[in-house]
Length: 94
Ligand SMILES: [Zn+2]
Image 1 (cartoon, rainbow, N blue to C red):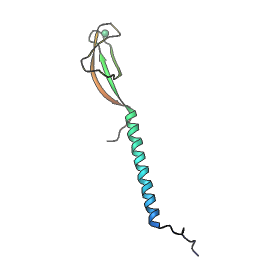
Image 2 (cartoon, protein in one colour):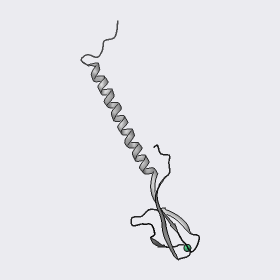
Image 3 (cartoon, rainbow, N blue to C red):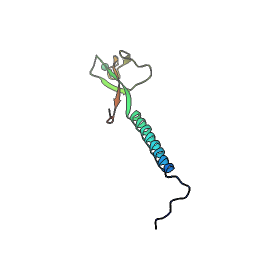
Image 4 (cartoon, protein in one colour):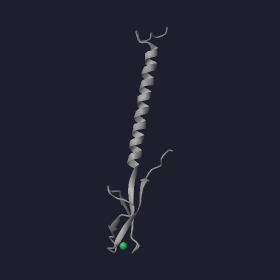
């Protein structure tokens, strides 16, 4: 004899519950992926000095702009921000 099904439980509800759980799981995975991608990328400011060979990158700070004058830590002259870009350290899916 077959074992009896759980009484009063429509199999349709089970299917719906499984689908709902799968959907929630998929949404959670997607949110995690977005968070990870955000953590992997950062905005970088590139500084170059025309007087010496000083060249450096640092974390972008609010107020940075291309052409901004800053002091060269190597020769003490005027160095300039030459590039501001987003850097990603990991592989990204298209
Ligand atoms: Zn310099």
